[in-house]
Image 1: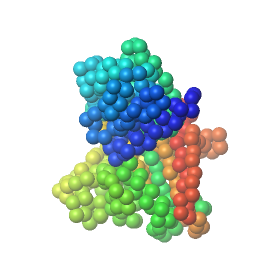
Image 2: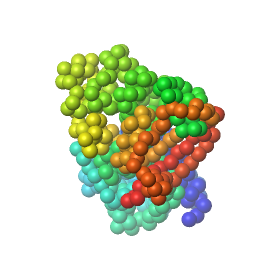
Image 3: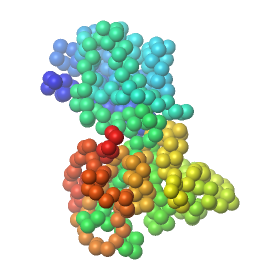
Image 4: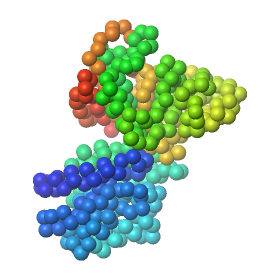
Amino acid sequence: MADKDKSYMRMALKLARKGGGRPSYEPLVGAVAVKDGRVAGLGFAGDGTQSAVISALDEAGSDASGAILYTNTAPCLDLDPLEAAEIDGTRDAGRCLERLIESRPARVVVGAPGSSEQAVPAGGAGSPGPAVIDRLRQAGVEVTTGVLEQECSELNEKYFKYARTGRPFVTVKFAQTIDGRIATATGNSQWISGPASLRLAHQLRVEHDAIMVGIGTVLADDPRLTVRLVNGRDPLRVVVDSRLRVPTAARVLANGASRHTLVATTRRSASARARELEALGAEVLELPEAARGGSGLNLSELLAALGRRRIASVLVEGGAGIITSLLAARQVDRMIIAVAPKIIGRGIEAVGDLGISRLTDAITFKSMKSRKLGPDVIFDGRIEYGDD
């Protein structure tokens, strides 16, 4: 792989990140048109009205012909994903592809095209990346794929999973002491991590479509679950509450917040209580109970329901019961843990019993990073399950 290909792909990745803040079912895409060794055009996915590659070609003008076009994912996927699911020359994505072919590029370099597997649920998206690349090659355009593939895949990991499965990408985030506690034995947890880690938590909220917590977290901490320490939109608030114990005065419901709050419950909850929450403006979603006779709700069914609503990414901030259940059900894709240099001894663990008795059955990670952030160390890993 030529170093210049990597260099221009890094430029495309940097441009793609400028489109952050969009829903996770829309990919982040950057494009760089290079002619005779110089950058002739740049583009990134913005409001969905024009593809990044077309923006780069427009800026390149007459230099588009014979140029090398670099893009972090397959061209034209950054238009409305429902349109992009049908590459037939009559939809927006099809016209984008025709325009790209007509510009006669010398070569198209793609970072991570995505999977050929697609799921297009009601209101969901599909990822036709390989089909786009096939069309380019059939038209005689030379295409190179896999340049900085891991970096490009991770940038759009939420989009790729949702396009492939119709289910949201799940990130679990929590702060713990160095001896593995997320709270003291009395339940006190504010604040384990430092100010910089708290800002990271708010940035992660911006980057996800929904934020999920259990009723225990609501009762113990009364969180707002909004974005305050950074700029960005508030995610949908999802409270897992199998018996509808959430107080009507809770901050996730107060002062109009209820209109952007979904309370997931089971048939065990009282219908009168559900009507009370709905009168406040909250949505109450009744779901099946967990398997094996559990009293909680089925979190896999909840994720599927969120996927049908075009929620393509979920940030889980606790508590321990939800984290444990999601890990046991193999529903977690990424874990971000802020490890604070504090020791409290007896307290509450982030992860409970997973039924693992042999180290060979431990959950492992396919990629990991760590960095220091203020006084804390941040662990960031993508989980690898045995059937990945």
